Image (tube, rainbow, N blue to C red; front, side):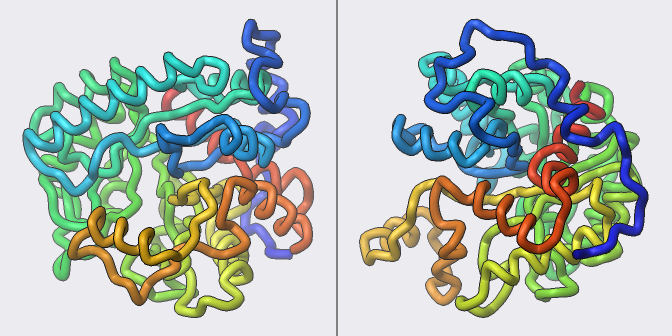
Length: 362
């Protein structure tokens, strides 16, 4: 059992959190799985594709997933193209949620996650995985916030107006515009995300933000020196500022080995708990919920979708035991097997993230 460097925060206990905002709803019982039949889980950044049908959503909900933060639009786009793509994605997800109120809540506050849990639905929070959608117009931060966006990643993999992504050979840190952007996001109550950032840009962002931030889908560089991993120094900085780091499930970020990848995933969680404290670690899957089969047809679809960014040697990206809609329950049971208390499991599976969202977006 990993030891926390920090004392537990009593107010973060899941029993206290889940006692709030769970009044009877008109939708209670309409979802395929009632909130009482599955524990509360919150994915800091995962996929929720519009083509998911009832059978898959039933399995996702049965695993305990009550809330998820999803990416709107393509983070690889820039300038006006990025803005138009983001607007179209927002409208598309809004329409899908409106058409499926028995499954989804468009989430704009922390208690929406608890209401979804009570109803047997899924609360869907909106994220941009880049800030190129804002261009250099800070008023777009407010415009998108008013339409439901609740978090934005400062950078994707390369350089933008705000700072340097993790692929940049030279990390120049948070730019002057980046500082203004963080300030505006703090003003409106939008959660700042530092996933994909270079380590200098990440550290600068933590220091610049007056609110706690999220490192929504990351791994630990001390265990695997991947370009997408986070140093202990920055993991600790995010935690000391009140933020949360979500543990990503993309296998190459965790380990170079295909066998034993699930153990590697739990090792990253253990390490993050030891570095950050139990109150500052969450799950950020960055994963599809479908069961993926490594067929040539699927690989070809990836080549088309990812272009030059596709590296066949990295595949499969997934961990076999987490390949499918039941992964939240697999993780929960694995944490128990590793000796975590029920309260600590509940913190990692959603309580910590819920606390952060309540602190920042209300």
